[in-house]
Length: 87
Figure 1 (tube, rainbow, N blue to C red):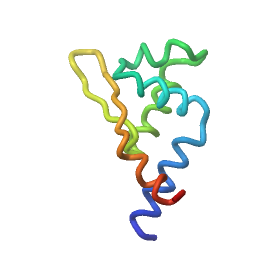
Figure 2 (figure 1 turned 90 degrees about the vertical axis):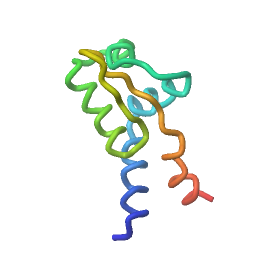
Figure 3 (figure 1 turned 180 degrees about the vertical axis):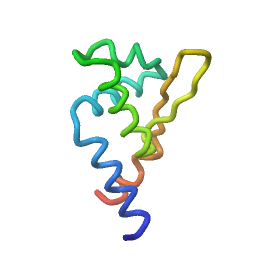
Figure 4 (figure 1 turned 135 degrees about the vertical axis):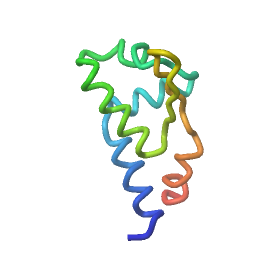
């Protein structure tokens, strides 16, 4: 399978879930910690971090850790694969 197809599948899989789309929408505003991103959702933190892992594997977000705080940031260029396919 060509690499671009794999990337496209990962992006669309990541965006297929409403929780993950809401996280992406929130990150458009700016970076945020795990707890800040999780706050609006009624789920356990380990379940929520699985959503963040999917977004990170798809290349849609990156994370950095400072002490005990992990902060996520949107990678808008990652949506270019989907944009190119849709065009």
